[in-house]
Length: 271
Image 1 (cartoon, rainbow, N blue to C red):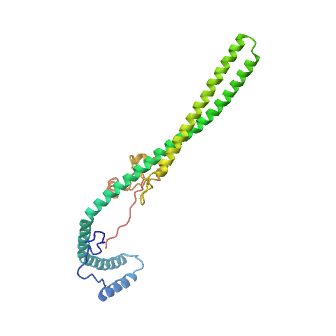
Image 2: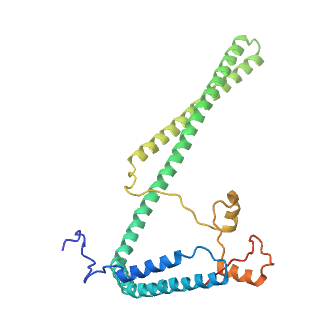
Image 3: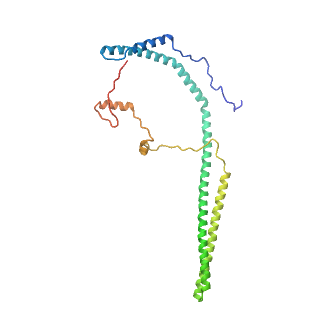
């Protein structure tokens, strides 16, 4: 068998399906119930209450009977659905395991590639900034060296005593040191620039982004209470526990107080 062939018939449905229909008798019963209920437009006396409750009982009786039949008819469908889900789950279980494993390997590779790119880019930027800084420093040093050389020249020209000649010679030596400092700084700038260029070329030759893989921002909640204070709670949803809250309402009664809610009475009518 060709392993690349798609298993188009991996799941097979056998037997016949369900044809859903409402019987004419049921439609007639429904129509009669609706017409009878529609005649009651107001409840203004105990007699009206009895009539309304009688119609409610008839409506509820048919509704409950239909619901019972619906559940009985739906049971085989639910069982078939559960069997279908189980068969499909069993079939694709190992496939998903290997798919997720390979996905993680590819994702880890891409994450490491991106990490290296970011590290190299940060280092390239640092070296580029270093080059610029050293070039500016070299310019300042060159200006100072030229100033010292001019001062030494002027001092030597004007020197008439041994002391003045000695001072001029000291200026010459100082100027020479300044020139050497310029050379060192320029060499450092050149080295930083070369290293930055080498990194840039290496980044160009690096593996291209993996097709179909991207890094996306996500989050992990570490403290939901702290998060609820941020942005006035706009980033969280607070939902009450109705069962527990209703029990507390019944405990404190209509005159009771529970922070954040208003206790009230509502009418409940049984069919």
